[in-house]
Image (cartoon, rainbow, N blue to C red; front, side, top):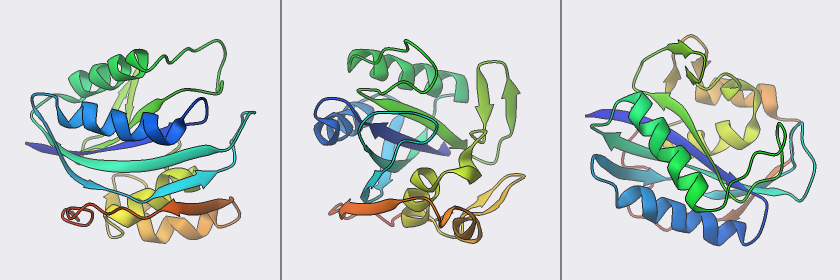
Length: 170
């Protein structure tokens, strides 16, 4: 089993419900076990327009390959009505494969760690909820990277009530 981290976000429709439903959908997949969920955060759009986003992250243990996990995330996005009319368009649901074990993958349609992982408070803050000492391969420790995004607006809107919230801290 490999530990992977997935970022979830949405800013169209009932974003909170879409994220919750997407987590349930992920949890029901064969080969995927959610081990922890971060708090839910409200953030301003980055390089985009539209309403504020809601964001969180989950830690999963998976027997799927990185490619299979990405394909699953894309299928779930489509199920929730995700459209891609232009780059960084507002969305009903966005699932990003942030980390896949300690692997570094650089393929045209699959890059892990996520290429902008260290530049976004909406990624780092939820990751810090799950594993503040997590080392992002080739980038650095999550807790140390937070200072670099301190100027980005992010506010906690819902505390995770999952008993497994901090169960996995690699």
